[in-house]
Image (cartoon, rainbow, N blue to C red; front, side, top):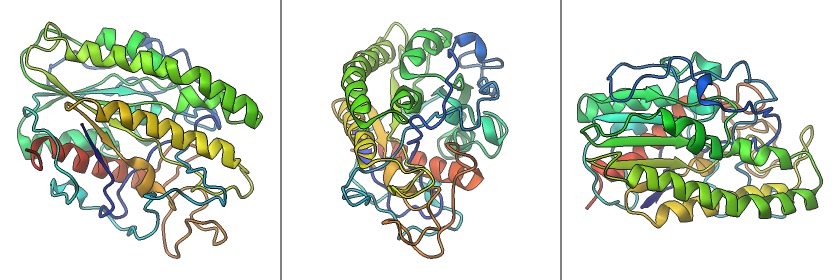
Amino acid sequence: MTTRNPQRLGGLTCLAALMLALGCGGDDGAAGDDDGASSGGSGAATSGGDDDGQDGPGDGNDDAGDDGDDDGGTDAGSGDDAEDDGPDDGMDGNDDGPSGTCQPVPLRMIVLGDSIAACSNVGGGTSGNCAFNQLHDHYAETYGPTSYENLAVGGSVTRQVLDNQIPNVATGMSGHALVVIYTGGNDLQPYLLGSDQAAIDGFETLSPQLEETWQGIFAFFDDPENFPDGATILMNTQYDPFDGCTSPPYNISQVKLGLLVDFNTDLTARGDALDWVFVADQYASYMGHGHHFGVDSCPNYTAGQDGWMDDLIHPNEAGHANLAAVLAETAATAYVDCE
């Protein structure tokens, strides 16, 4: 498995979802919410159920990408700053990072996850502003025809990806599949607004549950009866909407920012253990483009950077373009820069 920290992707890099909790009144994530999700491998692009109006502060679909350094700064590799804010060209597939293990070129792209993956606030899963639809277009243009199935449901937690979304994935079809899974924020959201000790205790309970769930997800996509020609999974670390800053009006504590780092570390380790799973580092590149992008007292402030947040937790169009670019560059290590 290969983890990428694409620092050269300018204004369109990604780092995804700290909003662990600041609002995700997560829905039950039932598979039935996905209205319009395409049938597996049909080749027709479909929007994967938007999030039933959960876009606002109550959505909390993405975890905080904060670092937890005691001074409010980001940890090493947060790569804030030097990123340009202009349109990103990172979807060209050229990357300078470590090579990955070569994977078969996909004939299907399957998207699972929460409202960020469903692109609820930028027009839905088939919108031109949706990071995952952009990624699909990039694949189709670069590697050949690839079907697009967006089954993401707003408000979903990781367990609901396994229990409610995966049952909607068509199996037994020929052709390799690229599975993009964007989830985690809603798992963490219950602990954001409580005490630090409650957050620590909650995370200790959550971590083994996530491990079990991810093993179930991996087992499903690794089963040759489900995917005779195999599957490649593309996961993501979570960005920090607050730029690693504890300033008002959010006042997120360093303890909670540190838990996001732990979450990202655990997720990366899961991906690194498998040579057919790739992790896009969306935490580093997003730093300095969140809600505190213009606060010069924050540790990741750089003059002239743009903000990539649309609301409390969802990225705006520039943020989605960044997510798409980082995902594309990371995935290139499976198809271009690989060995």
